[in-house]
Length: 104
Image: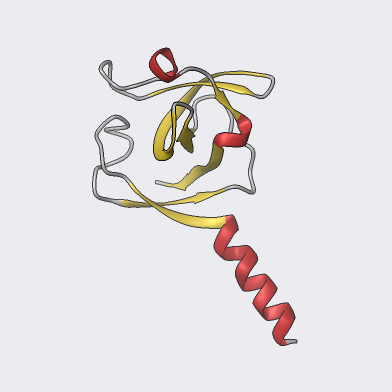
């Protein structure tokens, strides 16, 4: 029973996680310094906010909106005109998507 409880707890911790927004590129939908829930259990769709690793610098985690999906590649952009997007860092492979924002 302890093993089942441990596995369930471990699964939930990885399936639902908190994201703290630090920049303004997803404003006004996401507010800087606020925490949001994200999950990797639900496949993200066009128009949704996702948490992902920057294709050019995998140590950097970003939160942006999906503009277009082609097979396993995502074109991603911020909500503001000056936001960094796939135009600067390229298409994002689905393997770099950590999850999608679920509670705003």
